[in-house]
Image 1 (cartoon, rainbow, N blue to C red):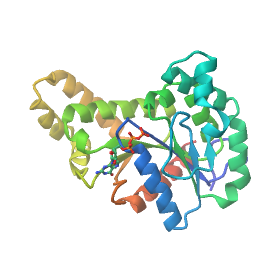
Image 2: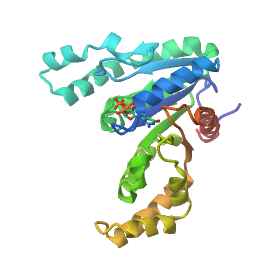
Image 3: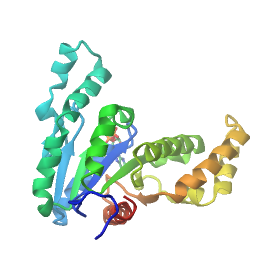
Length: 264
Ligand code: GTP
């Protein structure tokens, strides 16, 4: 397929899926489920872990930042706390990221997707220079999409929903990559309410107005801002626990990759 990105060797595959989410959204469980799905369906996946501080992963990864950077050593060597340690480890890894890209490029013909897990503290990836460098390195070489994992049951509260969406919005504008709102835990709460709120901001305002802690003018202005944001994204409901929505997830990834090829 032709694309306007200006990179002569740009390929349609593999598609890079960067998985980000607030702590507790179920990111790790979802990664596990996605990896299992690729195995069951004979999807050719590659798995990358970018969290230097994770103790154990429930799934096997092909590339793991922990093989290159020893987080505890970095903390000691630079006299850092946990977050500084994660950030510095990512910085060290980012300087070698061209090697990671080369590894994927060499295998490109045999891969459909690269699933990328990010540090549990979301802002360490989304608001750091190394996070930006890594994202940019992916996106200038392969079609790249961001899966933003949402804790659906918790987002039934309008205030939580709005702050979650504002955060997603900031990631969209920072990365400028196709963003997939991935409503997780639909086994506990269906994401229908979220679709309705995104479709009709008056429905959201009605729900939010019952919350006394929220000023109605702020709610109204923000929901108008978000209305424009929602037009620019795709969403899907999944359950990392039950496995619901896996086919739908990869369909949305494909549509987002097409969008990427058309846009960049
Ligand atoms: P990290 O920050 O990467 O460690 O992961 P996380 O905190 O985003 O989520 P984790 O995978 O640890 O899941 C948090 C909690 O949500 C755990 O108790 C999971 O069992 C639970 N959970 C995750 N996905 C689902 C789901 O689809 N349905 C239900 N019911 N629970 C889930």
